[in-house]
Image (tube, rainbow, N blue to C red; front, side, top):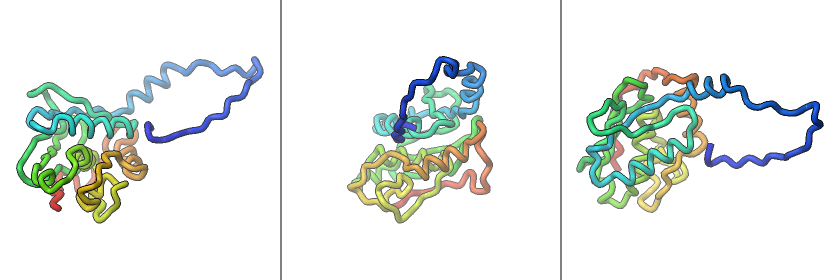
Length: 186
């Protein structure tokens, strides 16, 4: 993951113990386990940069699910729209072929909350994460309870692990709460 720093010690191995190149079949198998979810943000006017940054945050911090933008009108599992109310989203994990919605409410922005954090947080709901309120700014899913000064749009290690687990083995698990709409009112 992009946020993990790993120290590696290099040693020289004798020629008899040379490391072979990775097996292309293994690499292809690992790539096949990535769940691709398409999103349409064509109705999120004024939120374009925040959505792009929120999606990039998830794509950089989880390995087995990738969010891909589609052209307006193309089939998408996640519909992202701008509204005048409070942000809200369908609780996932959304599966390929499924449907989820993110409403990026301007009421939270009017009260001082960060647009990118809102977008990343609401997408987190689509990926199967509940709110963790009250919570610190370091928890993306603490949402508005972290206060208006919080600008963190990165999922922490626990949030990352929960999304990875929800999409393990290349498929989103079915959770009894699928489809609930979570409203993130202040």
